[in-house]
Length: 254
Ligand SMILES: NC(=O)c1ccc[n+]([C@@H]2O[C@H](COP(=O)([O-])OP(=O)(O)OC[C@H]3O[C@@H](n4cnc5c(N)ncnc54)[C@H](OP(=O)(O)O)[C@@H]3O)[C@@H](O)[C@H]2O)c1
Image (cartoon, rainbow, N blue to C red; front, top):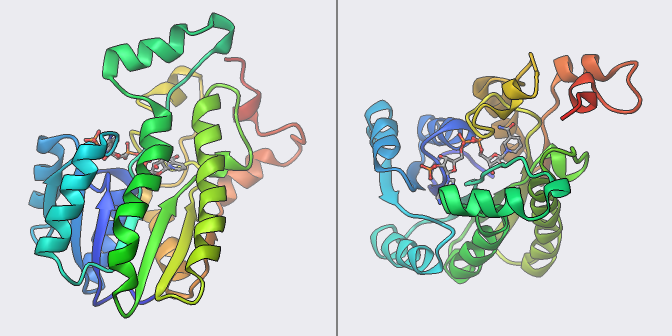
């Protein structure tokens, strides 16, 4: 996939990995649209990258996804790359029954299954027919290394990301022979606000790759049409050496 000449929509593109990707696509000569729930964060991203187009959208709400689709295809007829990047991560302890599950829904109105799984599936369904009419197109779904090496503190998150992986496999099979390439971006731990301080609270002292360290090899992999992109973190690999049951991070009591 080329990095320049695209029109790219990135969900959750105002911060972290999404913003880093937006920056690289803009630098490469693509037009980029980002969406997210927080107006202020979207405006901050635009102040940093003035050519960005911003749109408020809560991807957990189907009606907002539909409005995003209508707006995007009406205003950006050449939109040819969809990046399902928006995601949340919560600590959920099943030994407390439904307490954590319900607390997250009640306090922030957030549900990992809605945001991490149902939303990318619904948004993909909305956009695929449009993408199939483009000469070259792509869907990029952001899963996680935790889809493959799950960690106890965030069981629902890991399950949603494993499901995103499976979704990529079948979507790629369905779209074979069309103009739409299906990429799965599988980040290792990256130092963003995804965990909302939970890593620190769990006693971790290492927070992963910077977004810059992560995004450069990821963009190269898009260019090389690597459909399953696993960016390695040598520091984390070194920490795992000699810990066959998992890294010191994973062995922390929670
Ligand atoms: N950081 C890591 O270690 C890591 C590792 C593996 C995979 N990932 C994945 O990478 C992706 C990006 O995460 P990140 O690390 O860059 O964290 P981040 O900075 O927190 O980015 C997540 C973005 O998603 C947006 N978002 C959350 N809920 C949304 C909703 N309902 N509707 C629309 N936008 C929503 C957030 O903006 P608003 O809150 O303003 O909506 C935020 O901009 C996620 O899918 C995450 O699971 C991250």
